[in-house]
Amino acid sequence: MFKEYPSNEIQTLRLAAEKGSAEAQFHLGECYLTCQGVAQDYAEAVKWFKLAAEQRFAKAQNNLGVMYENGECVVQDAAQAVTWYRLSAEQGYAHARYRLGSMYTNGDGVLQNKFEAAKWFQLAAEQEFPGAQNALDSLHISGY
Image (cartoon, rainbow, N blue to C red; front, side):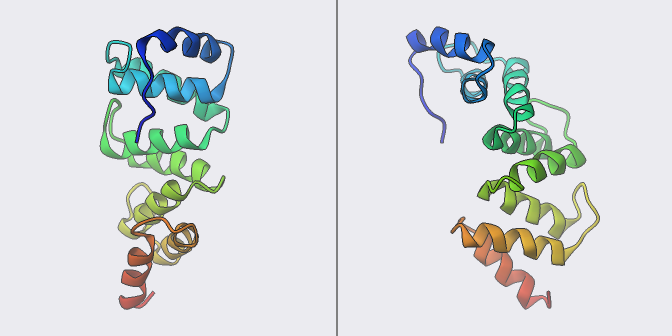
């Protein structure tokens, strides 16, 4: 799932991240999260993901959504998860569309709305995201 960086490439990645490259910021965040070429540091991971996310980097926005939803490296906050998932989903990132649909299905961080959930599951299913079609089928079976 995560791109692997040898430790000798981390400095180049850091320079690009510090110059404002959203993609480099995202990958540097992954390095800190997964202990690749640097000591694991969750605060640094979140910092770099947020910098990339603020530049509309969809994968970083999605990662922040996952982190807030699960309370990984940050205080669990379903409303924050929804915010980050929505930003990513609106850019067409399939995983975020699926997760946003799940949040609406369960009423996590938003008012439960199965019609809204179906919308996001449908968009993810059209991108052939695993599980989205099953989630959509489950909603249809339950009458939505």
